Length: 240
Ligand code: FE
Image (cartoon, rainbow, N blue to C red; front, side):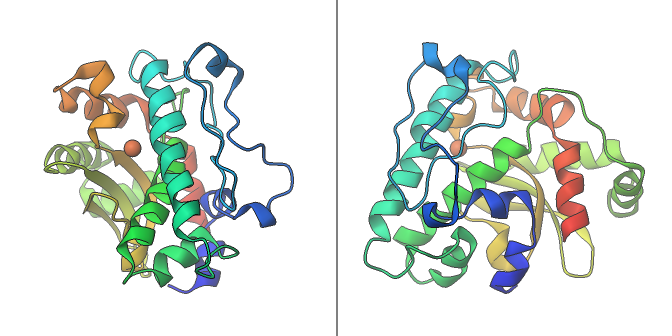
């Protein structure tokens, strides 16, 4: 997949441009609800911490404001800050995040940070405070590849539950339009496999441990059954 293809992929591509390409993005901005919780660090660029697309309390009771505050304001912010530090003087400063991911395959210290910034920006958009459902078109395609939407959901949960340690579970679409499920370990992202992500679940401990401790399966079930943002998946599906 070339750089132009990434740029065409829609919302996430827009979220991951460096500072120089953005006009009104507030550095480190969080929703008003965050004012009573841990403040986010403010990475100084070229990449910025994107604000969450909903208030910190929006995903409760499934994902608490405390978890979102730390996950976004500390972990995600930390990846952004470290990425900014590691690309200083490399020539990556004015590149898109997607370009950096593809071009740093032999530089894991940069690749890991770039991928974690991308993965988290993507993950926030995969969660919705309001119930959403697959469109008719996506329902048909999920049925074709997984048997039904319900069978897809079970397979997605099973995939996420089966990841050992830290990683990500993904619904992806390949160049031929085939939908499939992919698990990636640690910071890895299916972008490097030429796949278009439609949905993801973060299964790193920081995504759930404050809320459900060792019951990771409860967090995964809540995400799949209640929080998945099918409208975002549809946007990605249509743009790829
Ligand atoms: Fe995370």
